[in-house]
Length: 233
Image 1 (cartoon, rainbow, N blue to C red):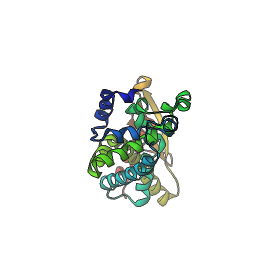
Image 2 (image 1 turned 90 degrees about the vertical axis):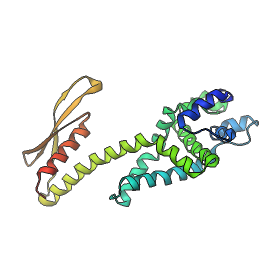
Image 3 (image 1 turned 90 degrees about the horizontal axis):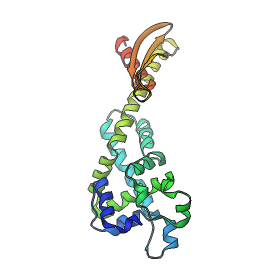
Image 4 (image 1 turned 30 degrees about the horizontal axis):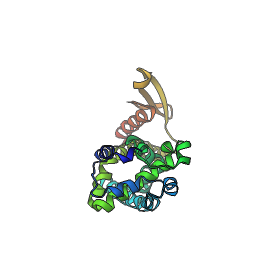
């Protein structure tokens, strides 16, 4: 197993930005229940660690979002947190860390590609968070979460900016005229992996603005922002 090699564990610790004083906590966080039930050389598995890790992650992400978005309402913050703290996002995080390679899995899970299962990967991230907390305390785990989830929080911030511009414009026009704007793709340029989209925003047959972006959503966001700037509120 990869976990039997200290140098491999060091690689993982370097990736997460934290080196354990008690390596057994790290191993426990990576031990799936299937391995524990088949191999009694492990004293426990990571299911209870998942429980606490979920709570710690939710708390820290909540604090990050509150600081980053001081004007957001509770409902908006809850939606943003849910977009970050979920199985899909955590599994993607685990994949970036190659966490599946380090897991202790039983034979049954090995046969069914358990190292790639989103549920197992997401749970391992939560368990890992608990292990860091138990080994180094709250400030250490908070710092690790901030570093690991920085790009994800930025991505969510960008996506919500897109939604804000479009929703604000729609609310404004719908409130005044009881009609909503329309977005139309004008052009697509560049290769498939690096396209630039241009979108035209129209309202009641009149063009209000045009926007460009790496995808349709980004182009629509720019068009909506420009339209809001040009409209007298």
